[in-house]
Length: 304
Image (cartoon, rainbow, N blue to C red):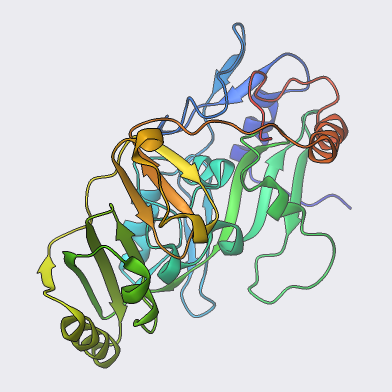
């Protein structure tokens, strides 16, 4: 017996169809990532709204076209949030890109927050993968595969996400620092530790007592002061080994802001793309062929 779907999801599946190139447009905050849709591609929008929040279960179901800001505004009424980044984009776009929030250390990864995804396949079928519960160990984690795939394996229509409580206290603290690891290692659980080679910014969130203790530890290490927010981030996002972030070459990056302990760097210049090893390339191409043999989903982009 087929699972019943609401009419909005069914209409979206018809719009995706089963022939011809198609791509979904969200907030376009990362529209140029890994290529652009080829000319002639049918650009559509995912359905939005229909937010079903279950605070006691710490989950929320939402359509992919809903903005992350709109979702978090709804969740805030019950003192909760998700790990999705607020950059003006949509829920589906954030999942398709797979880019984590600036406060990754505190919020967790987007991939871990996705419990279930309902997507439209290349042949126009509505597919549900994962389960709308936090504790689920059955079957393959197909929904995790959709995170970061840039809509090239399936078109996301709806998702169920894990939520977490909004912290009691949130504060940014900054100081001059040449060695961010000393600061990072002195902290219990920072939400973010950012560094531009000269200055460090620390984001502390949590219970009042925990934040107070970490704040005292920081002020014992140097001349820290509180600021309103994080620093502005340069345009290009790099992925690096966390251990390499304190050995950055400014000649290569220009101005930068590094996320210590994470392996993410924002720089004035784009990262030089390294050659993909043959095994990864073969696996990726095989995945694409299995999910989209005609290459009609988001043509022109690759998640390699």
